[in-house]
Length: 211
Ligand SMILES: Cc1cc2nc3c(=O)[nH]c(=O)nc-3n(C[C@H](O)[C@H](O)[C@H](O)COP(=O)(O)O)c2cc1C
Image 1 (cartoon, rainbow, N blue to C red):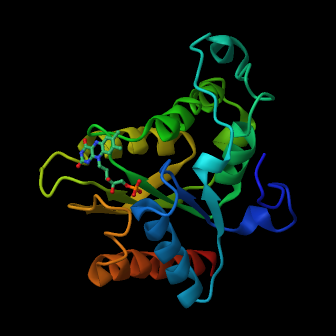
Image 2 (image 1 turned 180 degrees about the vertical axis):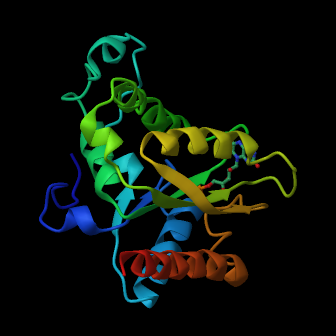
């Protein structure tokens, strides 16, 4: 596992989850995730931070076992089931990721693919899946290229359908161009502030919904 506290720790289920999804430690996605978390804290909230690279995520085998049973044969082999348990309980979600070849990096895409067994549970009308409340999701994508109208399109489309499984909709997303070096986002106060504000707004929206 990883040095983080156990995923089942008391109270974890009520916290929003902030996912940093780059294989590169200390890079732009990590800084985006930290800024979003700071925004939540600015607004008086708290969150749980997940550095995806610290978890064991095996790729989907395409074995179709979940189509028959709704369960994944890999569920006890890695940390994916624990991560999806957090997603199911979180009041809202944030994902920060780099763009790799116009899409998401392999590990993050591997994690998304493992959502297939949860999609199958929806098709099987699993009561726990059907009872999930509608929730918001947010995202920041970091790309090295300085321009490109369609640079974020593929990633956002995958996220839309991945999130749908868990009754989440993408409420806000930021796409940052020209972020290649690991400190590039850190050197751009305007972009950092935009992610931080998004975090604060997400917390305020969550509090408003709870009233
Ligand atoms: C394997 C690989 C593929 C990449 N593909 C793209 C790409 O298609 N378009 C782009 O703009 N940047 C691309 N980049 C650059 C990264 O998106 C950029 O460096 C980003 O800031 C990395 O984020 P991180 O610091 O969070 O890891 C690629 C980088 C790597 C390592």
